Length: 251
Image: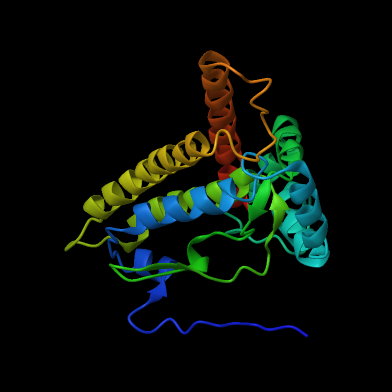
């Protein structure tokens, strides 16, 4: 027997993508999204959980194979070959699409993005999967959830904000050149990562001596090595997030 709970998100909640098209600023978006990503990613990772718990949940979410296959197809396969599912503004971007298909180094980098089962991720965390008001932020549509690389969620969200930034010129007119809104988007991108970094590492520090088995205290047993581990982990996560953000934008 199964139970599905559905929450009604009352007006004036709208899809974040629609809000960004309308040029609406959301003062709590950064705080809410950084908090959501930090908590969901940290508490489902080996930084917090035992190896046994982690592997059990990875196995449980392996059943979501069809939606994972679809994600891999549209993100990591179709853009790099001729596919009936690809769309771009033809003929103006024909050469750009061809350049993507022929970029060997890009293909190598994209292939490396698919291999980690770090945490339980949303799996489709773009601006169409977030509903907002000026006071509320709600993440919706988790049907693509699986255990995968943390940077997939972070990159998807930040990559969509970058797309929103570049799209603003198309919404500009004589009355509003969208410059102020573009600056708000850039600040939102920067602040989201910085606040995520702060919240994630704060959780890590708080639970450093907990059950998590990624870095056992008996081995990583002094402040110097703990700082080195955390710095490398977050630097790698930032770089991987940029890679996933780029893949999301190409897609």
